[in-house]
Amino acid sequence: MKHLLISLGLVVVAQTSAQTLKTLADARGIHIGAAVTFPGSPAVYDTTLNREFNGIVCENAMKFGSIMTGENSFSYTGADAIVNFGVARGMFVRGHNFLWHKQMPSWFSSTSYTPSRDSTFRMMKKYINAVMTHFKGKINEWDIVNEAVARDSVGMRPGTGAFAADQNSKWALLTDAANHNYDYIDSAFAYARRADSTVLLVYNDYDCEGMGKKSNMVYNIVSGLKSKGLVDVIGLQCHFYVGPSTSGSNGAWVPSELVTNFQRLAALGLRISLTEVDVRIQTSPAPDAALLALQRDGYKTLMSICLAQPACKSFFTWGVNDAQSWVPGSFSGYGVALLFDNTSSGSPATFTRKGTYLGVQEALLATTNLRGLRANGLRLIPLDAHSRGFDLRGRNLSVFPYNPNFVIRKSITSQHKQ
Ligand code: G3I
Image 1 (cartoon, protein in one colour):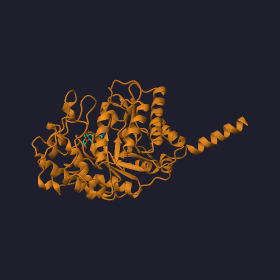
Image 2 (cartoon, helix red, strand yellow):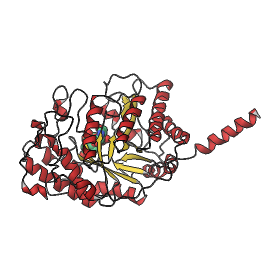
Image 3 (cartoon, helix red, strand yellow):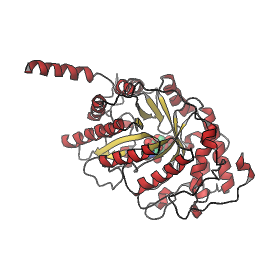
Image 4 (cartoon, helix red, strand yellow):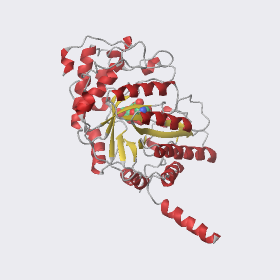
């Protein structure tokens, strides 16, 4: 009997491990996706995407600097290739992103570009309208504002203190952040809602997955936006590390805090998307078996937490394989943060599934929370339900709760009321 049980167990393991992440995720109503830079080259990259993922997002091709090449010119070639790849395969397509303090076009970041507050809003509206119109019907959810809050102890961008120099947001600076006025956030969401009411709108940020000062600030932002009908999804980036680290607080995470934070965000009526998951570990010296096991368990835990929270709908990794990951370039001595290994060439080239992959697979297999088949249809969000009460600059909106010094300016010019 014992022998039989063991045999049966082996059979079960053999069967289940053959199921891809995509197959498992489809059946559990969750989007598992990856950020990509070059679908179509090499071919195995496509093969892996097709086999393992039901979601996709442009790592860089859809950012402001990639798309809006001039004040009146747009370039969609790179983004089109990735978005159309996803649409053709019925993937859940994320848009990333509209307003960020990095990867801006040079004409915008130039110190000689100093439009008035009103002109900045006009340009922002034109930008969002044009890009959302171009991709209409293809994008499921879109990061409208990315990383408006700096790290702990700094506050809203532009902040003060240690991180101020590299964390300024030109969007904030041009639209009156000097007076603690951050209505560019509401405005961007309002423009987006009006441009395409079928897209789920996302506020996306990092280091706010657990509990803490930044997490509270992000909670207050999305709470305010949600009360005005302007946001549908909180995007939690999830750039994590496990193991001994000297890289500061950035990326440290406590699973129980995630559970708590997910609960309070879900209670606002928001969907939760894990948008840029990677779990980096020390690579120099090379990681030992214990560290790799910790990393595998980290991925498993994160997916388990998402599956246990009905509001958590998406789990996107920030890249497919370690060779294309942003991590080693930004965290010296850290890496191997993704689900597939470094191999990206050879004949035929192959991406090998890592322990991290098996951790995610185990979590998917273990869940009893089958949510039904994944639905990918774009939905229409009734415009009237969301657009009441504010103009295109978000002017009728109440004071943001996170900043007691917030100043509401009354000088609305007529052109913003359309
Ligand atoms: O395109 C140029 C190329 O022409 C040039 O030769 C090369 C030389 O370094 O640089 C290329 O641009 C690089 C770009 O990625 C495209 O590869 C930039 O230097 C590089 O800084 C940029 O890094 C990206 C980073 O955002 C920028 O901050 C990463 O690939 C991308 O993974 C990363 O993604 C962000 C998310 O958007 C937001 N959340 C954090 C996440 C990680 O930083």
